[in-house]
Image (tube, rainbow, N blue to C red):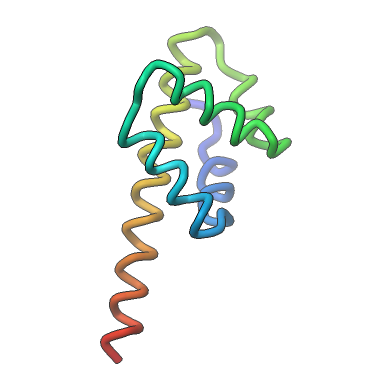
Length: 88
């Protein structure tokens, strides 16, 4: 897979609302959701270049799916942090 550092940095910098939006799109995964995700993340120049580096449609779809995996992991981490902060 292409350099995932760009992906990890992008996901970690998303606002809570934007991260939640992406996770909702992956939870639904209907036909147009991947296109909406691509349009959403394509507004970020580094993510647009990252997706544009795919060597074909199969790799592009794999990259979009990898983004969803990282978005879900980031959301889980943030939710755990919020729970830990509220418990103190």
